[in-house]
Structure formats: structure tokens, C-alpha cells
Length: 319
Image (cartoon, rainbow, N blue to C red; front, side):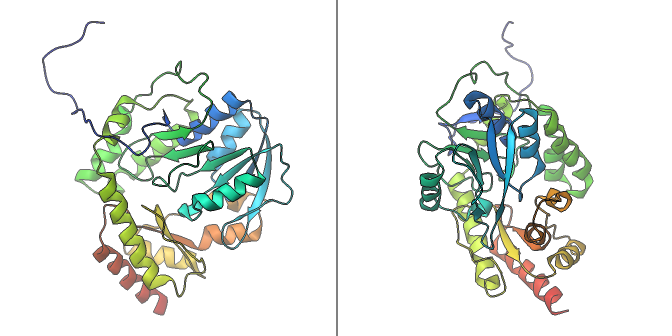
């Protein structure tokens, strides 16, 4: 096909770098796992009950034998019944597990896959399969990274296209999130049918436009403020990670607080709601899903916004 020259301008091309330029770039995090299962011929995997159904769906689609494990009060895995031969899928919840902790885990479970979906700015442990996502941290429609020593089949993958997934992102930039929420959920639902593809040209380009140092700093400052005001009531003993995802505030009656905050247009998600429908999950996992309030700390907000959230929370908490 002949190259077009002239005419109207397309989206601008950026020339920056990303923190994960050496990783394999995919369209979604779940497809990082699907590629890994296929490339490494994984036949058995251990997953936490406290997890989204997207990962479980990938394992089912690949006909992988799936075992499940619980987590304790500090979100650490309880692994007494996991065989050494199985691959262990470990979720780094809210970036609370540093590489020293993960290294100790790997010394006991060699076949380790680290889900750093909530820890974009944490470096991967060397020689450890590690997955990252982009759209949980930045205004992009898709995108994920995989660190692995297995590349077979990656070069032959089709490259994804993302221009049709930009509608809700552009819409919220100029209007409100509520106006484009249906478009957002439709986009999220579409990922269920996506097969592993290389990251799109558009997403890769947008990711090269960000000031990652600034983004990490803002997220850390916002998280630190919330920790300073909520640590005395938070039932989770938290570390302050680099460039954190959200601030997980675990309190009694979290579901009630979430609803009242929503009335004030403070939108606090329920992460991994699928656990409520899992008969084998412990009541503790259901308690976590219901009562952890993941408070946004991302680069759209300042410490002044965190103070506003604290003021509203204090008002609700005292009522």
C-alpha cells in the first residue's frame, strides 16, 4: 500500500519513553496471561478467590486446571494446599508487596506469575513473569505489559487497533464521566472477547507522552496524605508504595459509606465483586470486597482534593 503524503493531520506522534519499554506490549493484561499460558504450556494454576473473573475466564478458555487459595487480614496468600508443580498467580494488591517480599515468595514457589496490575511503577523482579496494565493508571483505552523469558509466538501476533475505544475517554475530557459511563462499560465488556494482540499503535503512542515522574509523585503524595488521616481507623496496615494505584481504606460498614460518598459524587468502586457469587470463597474475602473503599489518588487530583474527601468522610463517619 502506498504511503499517504499530505492532507489533514492525524493524531500527533510522541517520542518519549515508558517505564516498561523492555517488556512485551499487549492489548490487555488478561491477554498477557493467556499468551503466557500458551507459550509456557501451563496446565495447572493457583488463583486467589479475591480476584476478578477475567483471569478465571482466561484459564477456562485455555483449559487450565485451576486451584484456589484464600488471603489473610493483610492480603497475603494462604498457600498450604498449593502443590509446587502448579503455577502460582500472585496478586500484588494495591502495590503492598515489595520485591523483597515477592523474592521470598518465589523462593518457595518457583513457578510464580506476579500480577502487578495495581503496581505500575514497581519494577519487575528479575527472571519472574510479571504483568502490568495501563488503563488503571492512565487515560488510555487499553494496553498492558508482560515480562517473561518466553517470546515464542509474540512476533506473529496481530497488532490491535484502539481508535474506536477512545470515545468515552475523549468525552469525559470535555464533559462529565456520567455522560459516557455506558460507553465506558461497553468498552470494558468488549475485552472479554479479545484475543492476545500486540498493543495498538495509538495506545503505545499516547503512553510515550506522559511525565511518569510527575504522575508517580502526585499519586504518592495523595496516598501519603490519606494514610496520615486514615491510618488510625484503617484495618489494613499499609505501606506507601511508589506511584500507588488507589488508597484502600478498610472500615466497618464500608458499603454504607461508599453509597453516601457516591451521593456526593465521590465514586468508590467495588473491586472483584465476583467474589460475592463464589460459593467456595470465604466470608472474609466477601467482607474485604464489600468494605474496602479504594479511594482515587491519581494524577487528576491534588492534596486539596484528598482533604475534601477526608472532610466528606468525616461528616459521614460521624453521622
